[in-house]
Every structure is written in structure tokens, then in C-alpha cells.
Length: 427
Image (cartoon, rainbow, N blue to C red):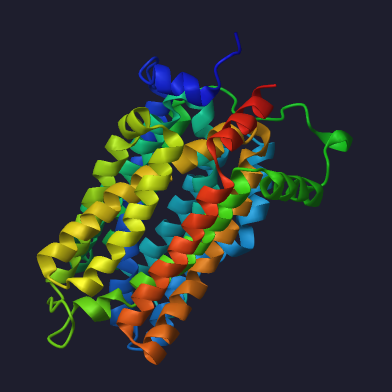
């Protein structure tokens, strides 16, 4: 009798083992760090409005957020694979607390300028690259393989709650108290997140403890090894390519969606105050999806779940074009949040299961450099497309491009593809 693959073991007994206390510490740290993310993500644009009226200068905040992934993603992957992944997170979060502490001092002394604000966001983004890669790469070391979907679902759920439901509203109150209080609160949360990991998680999470000195390959060699593995893998290659194309298309979609939704002349006709409430439905759906991911995978199987949830989430984005009623659009966006998150949870679990532990950092860094690197280009394409062809055509074009990426994914990744990859990893 042949041994069961990890996917078959998961399907037969997906509640077999608890997630454990080390994962609880990681999850608590993630929640605290993302609460700070939610605060800063709302606080920085609000502060920028008080410093400049230039759309170009304000847009620099978005560029500063994503630029570190383009510049540091591959190098950070090498670091994550070389050193203790717990320590990387602790150091990154501690540095983040220091960066935000500088922001608190500038805000309290009226020294905050637009240049300083962009620099602070840029430095914050650099810490995010290391902290986030360390957090996603360490999860397989904390939980049993058959519980990866459950663990990733909880991580994404906590991220959504902390960012959207707690951080953003809290930032609205903190900005009234002043930039110093806002930055100071985020700094305290980053420091507390580092402390939780330092105290609540023990052990060495280094994947190559003996790979030092003259025996260690160069960083460039390690980057090449990660890229070679990624683009040769029968599951990871189509997953990253399809995901990157979808990121490009959907970033373009949502970059101009506010013009379709807000204002007396818009298709949906929301006010500025109503728009965040409608988008909050997407976050609520994402939280629900994170809770349903493991059970849905158990019912349908992981590949069918990914196929179904991704295509549903894509097609639902046509609803605002076909039926621009506020309540209908809100329900559709909530459903997009549910289905998209379920698919993303399983896709992330694939990466954690199918990539050898010593390559997780480099493969994660390479995939995010490609996936996140296309997002600013997608936003630009969405704006240009809307100017030239109109909003509705831009939305339909984004959906068509996403569907093409979905077709590519499902024709390249089949049940036998995953079984072969599982068998190759365990052999």
C-alpha cells in the first residue's frame, strides 16, 4: 500500500492536531503588528493632506509602501533562509518601533514634513519586507502540515480584523490627537509585537545552521537557486504567474473603482462617508473566508476549492458594472472577500507545503517581488485605461485578464501535478 500524500492526509483528518502555543505567539504578534499597519496606513494619508495639496506628492506614499518589495524582496529571502526566522521578525519589528518613534518625535515637535513622512513610510516598508517574509516562512515550523490551511486562515483573519476593523477607525481618532500620538501608538504596538515573539516563542528557527563560512554559497548563488526552483516547479510557477497577472488586473480595477462608486454623477452614487462602509464588507468577507478555508478544503478538496473560489471571486467583479445598486454591490464585494480569501489561504498553504523549508524565504521573496511589483503598474494601467476607454471597459478588461490567468492556472495545475510535487518533496 502506498503512503498517503500530505494532501490526502489533510483530507482524511484535518483536525488531527492542535496548532500549539508557539503559533499562538506568532498569531498574537501578527495581530499587534497589523494593528499598527492599519493605523499607519490610514494615518499617513490623512497627515499628508495637512502637509500638501499635491496629488503627485501624496501618491508618493503609495509608491514608498511598495518600493521596498521591489528593491529588497530577493535579498530578504536570502536572509530569511540563512538566519533564525524568529529573530529576523523580532529585529525587524524592533527597528520598526524605532522608525515610528522618530515619527512620534517629529509629530510632537511640529517637525514633520512631507519629505519626512515619505521617508518614514519607506523605512517602515523595508521592515515590513523582512517581518512579513519571516512570519509566512516560519508557519510550517510551528504547526503540523495537515493544519497549514487552518493556521493560514487564522493569520489572514487576524490581519483583516486588525487592519480594517480596528486599525483604520483607531487612526481616525488618533489623528485628532496629533501626529505624535498616532506614530507613538504604532511604535508601541510594534515594540509589543517584538516582545511577544521574543518571550512567547522559544527555539532556533534557522534552516541551515551549519551552512556558514567558506562552505556557504554567495547570496547571488542563493537567489539564483530560489528563482530556479520557483520557475521549474510545476505548481509554484503557474501559481505565481497567474497570481501576479491577477494582482496587476485587480489593482487596476480598484485603483479607479472609487470614481464608479462615489459622487452624485457616479454609477453607484455613494457619498464619501458611505464608501468606506461598503468596502468594509470586503474585509468582513475576508475574515469569514479565513474561517471557512480549512472546512471548505476538507469538503471539496484543495484543487477544486482553488478553482471554484477564484473564478467566483473574479466573475463577481462584473456585478458593479451590470447592477450598480449599493446594496447589491456591497453583497458582491463581501462574497469576493470570502471566495478570494479561501483561494489565497490554500495557495499560501501550497507554497509552505511544496517548497523545501530551506528555500521558503527565497521563493517567497521572489514570488512577492513579481506579484507586488506588478501592482503599481496595474494601478497606472487602470488609470490610463479609464481615461481612454471609460470605467466600465476598464473593469471588464480587468475581469477578462484575470479569467485568462485563471484558465492558465487550471490547465497547468491538475491533481496529478500536485501528487507528483508532494511525492517529490517527500521522497
